[in-house]
Length: 162
Image (cartoon, rainbow, N blue to C red):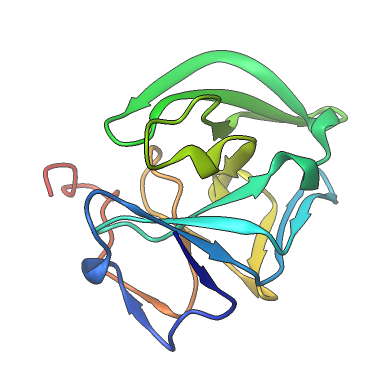
């Protein structure tokens, strides 16, 4: 894992490795939902994988845990292992299966323990270093697109077989 307070001017997702790499990111990362900030950290981890915009994982200690409600959904990543999901709930506003994490990540990804990722397209707003992110296309991957990230990105129609 490497540390980065600021990534290069631009990064092509086609330069990211497979299997994915973890990077620490010291920029301020925020997640807003239901009219409030539910996560705020300068200790995020970025997962960088070929053809995907980075996915940001926030330490659970930097999340308002009252907004996370466990669900029965789970998925398996061939690299990171078994992911569990949470609904994000603020008052009457619910984003189903909008956050996930790895309780016992596979070897090489142990740093993801006690971290949670959010689908930016299911939140009101997510930011990195003050920049509002765009969601990765599609409804499965949770990448965060910022101006320094260049595609094309996996996730949209016709990209599943990349």
